[in-house]
Image (tube, rainbow, N blue to C red; front, side, top):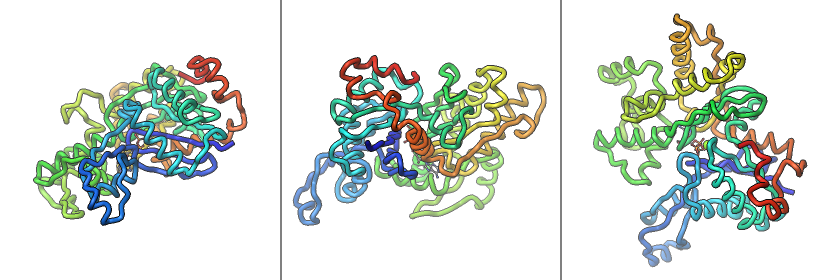
Length: 382
Ligand SMILES: Nc1ncnc2c1ncn2[C@@H]1O[C@H](COP(=O)(O)OP(=O)(O)OP(=O)(O)O)[C@@H](O)[C@H]1O
Ligand SMILES: [Mg+2]
């Protein structure tokens, strides 16, 4: 039996066979060509299709305008037709499978995934794709497993959503989970907006792709926003040029939305405040262990300066609570940044699959699904 691990995010799919440590990664977008000038495609020997998925979109976008949609919003599937196309592309095109009846699939879930959503995913896997067994697991738990921990608090900041998940002995404590609908895509949009303000054109979906690449290469999290802003106004030390675009204070101003969303008109707490409240809401006897085991995962945490700023602000919040300033070390705060954190949910999935792949009772089987329907899913944490 082949085991597939599938971490399907708002922005990117990370998937592969459980024995592969590195996932296949591609965008979870669906693109439909708007202009269908068949003669152009014929002369360039390109096969024209109604729908393109993932990496195929960039290739076709070089020849025609493409209407791009994203089936997942803030970590939750909203467009099932589009989602089915992404899965078909994943299983048949990228993993090269034809018959899924001898395969089992581990699907990751964002916290607070509605039950109806999980049921629909399961129905798709059994009834449309014909999988033999299905397993659901929370993304945060896998982020923790990937660095060999059972207890800790995971800060997972991806493309569409940021989750803070306190976990004890492998169990997520639901009431303490925090969710912020601010993540990497907001940083990209913010960067595009700031660059538009200086006369660059960054309005279409395609040019947002360019803004994303600039962000990944040049943006960083400021350790002192006021000082960096002053420095940017008075000097040119922060300026860099890339592909005809000049970036200046935008490099740290765009990521600031994660830490101080109120500065950008967003009604959301910033990441440090949400992390602080998640830990403080956990049992008093657990807090010390949580402060000492903060684990970053998700692509947005790859940004330079992210962990240092989080540590620093958390120490400030602890200082306020305890009535005196102190360093992160004095408060026992330790933020871990595993090197592979942009795909650590997938990696944690391969670790878990190594343990449970032969244990049939851990999975929902096609027989159980036929017999018990949605009831069969009660064996997973909810
Ligand atoms: N080096 C980097 N610097 C800044 N951002 C990065 C870097 N690498 C990846 N990202 C950003 O991380 C995001 C993708 O991360 P990830 O794959 O974890 O998200 P996702 O799982 O698709 O989304 P979500 O978990 O929110 O549903 C994108 O916004 C991407 O631009
Ligand atoms: Mg994710």
